Length: 404
Ligand SMILES: CC(C)(COP(=O)(O)OP(=O)(O)OC[C@H]1O[C@@H](n2cnc3c(N)ncnc32)[C@H](O)[C@@H]1OP(=O)(O)O)[C@@H](O)C(=O)NCCC(=O)NCCSC(=O)CCS(=O)O
Ligand SMILES: Cc1cc2nc3c(=O)[nH]c(=O)nc-3n(C[C@H](O)[C@H](O)[C@H](O)COP(=O)(O)OP(=O)(O)OC[C@H]3O[C@@H](n4cnc5c(N)ncnc54)[C@H](O)[C@@H]3O)c2cc1C
Image (cartoon, rainbow, N blue to C red):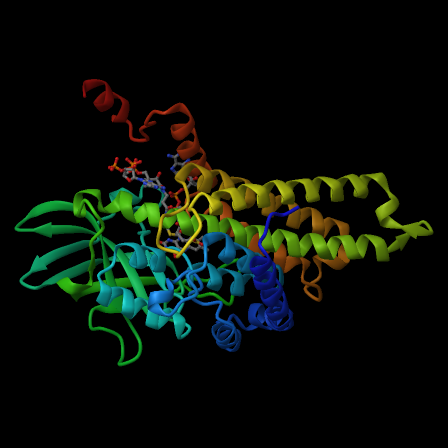
């Protein structure tokens, strides 16, 4: 009924198997706020890091749907592990595999297949939703580009090695547009000019560092510039096309968290007795569980549809459709907030206790309506696509549109 191939069903079983180990350490990862390196090693051994990397570069050449199946299983057990699987298969790594030079592709594939979760550096203190207003600059100096600026809320800052840094490129004082610059930290030490300035304390997903990163005269060789077709002038749009893949991944992590909370709510509702009978028999809860299951199935259907829109194949032959990705992410993010809260409600006071995972699910679910394009911004993107018209967000946007 689910339309999965036998290989996909086997891949999901493999992820489910590993998710048992992920579940066993999830509370500890949350409590200590440490990146789960032992789980990353297990995921690497199991071939779940870099699944979507084409076979020619040592990956499995898996599809976005394959990766989605893995992410959901891991996120059900450990949300941080789910998010690691997102960025090890989508986003920056997808961009490099699609647009990179062979040397860049080899470098990125080598890092991810060895266990690196790349970081994508877009957001700045004054440019969040309005990402194109970024002020981080990359100025051409001879054979290199010199980057200055500040990025914040960078997932994996301080643990990630490969960074895809979005910056506005200038040559001879001319603004060329926004481009992507590859920077590698760790190994032989951090490159001079890349400073992990501070870790930002987070509400949920506490084992995943969120960092503010300062770039101070960071030199990036021209060979590390990611050059999508169309050059810098189309750079932002092309990079965002790759980022649509990560939106599908983030939607899946949200779904996994919600599904994990739902499974536990189902078990508890049948085990817990009040008034001499299982609480699942009370219509108030039974309908709540029914609604939760409906929202989860709807989210999964949109996510799979978005993942399939990338087409089957070798990982680099197209990204998920922009509209489908935004629709899936909006629904999954809203669903995750709702379902995790309802699941906690089913558990009563026990759900509110830190002795149980329910409050962690609620905290972990909250970010997905903010990160990766907020619920509001993505609704505007959906509206633009279905209306077939640009909906400018700046005050003078419509005036400029009318004048054109
Ligand atoms: C796109 C926005 C930043 C709005 O800014 P603008 O109104 O200035 O930009 P546009 O004119 O809409 O777009 C410029 C250019 O890019 C193309 N584009 C934009 N989005 C996409 C897309 N999703 N897919 C393909 N192409 C896209 C657009 O067509 C234009 O191209 P042309 O110039 O016409 O060629 C804003 O809407 C927005 O998306 N804001 C959210 C920013 C965001 O998502 N940040 C994520 C940071 S990473 C992160 O959060 C990681 C968390 S995680 O994954 O867990
Ligand atoms: C846990 C987490 C991880 C993240 N990881 C990364 C990462 O790895 N890399 C990275 O680059 N960024 C990352 N981000 C940043 C994330 O992409 C931004 O937080 C997001 O794009 C929103 O920007 P902002 O927080 O500055 O909010 P703002 O843009 O300041 O928005 C504030 C509020 O105003 C609303 N709003 C803004 N503009 C509009 C509009 N036009 N219409 C309607 N409402 C609007 C928003 O929806 C929101 O409710 C992460 C964020 C979080 C929380």
